[in-house]
Image (cartoon, rainbow, N blue to C red; front, side, top):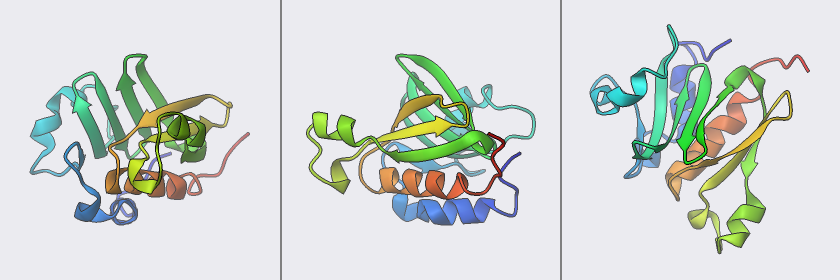
Length: 146
């Protein structure tokens, strides 16, 4: 299952539109998709990239119509959106790194139907809030099998 073409505008609105973009975080459009060509080979078939937070070529997170993909020093991690059951702020991690409030947060914990978890690192501020809002909304769009 995937986010349908009809729901893409809803996803982008939940993200916060251009107001939630940052230095590293962008909505992927026809006009800027050439800037993310090195990420295109990670896409499957008719999968559409929606939002990316790219710090560099080896540290990025991309939301697509089917999955959330995240590359960092631990390697590539992938979660199907249809299997996402939990997304929230990594409060223990944020407190340990000295975060004092919403503007300092950058870590989101994800969990799937198989209880597999991983942490995303997103650009602080509005991009973080936008990503969290989208993931929180999307997890309710698909019926869960487990």
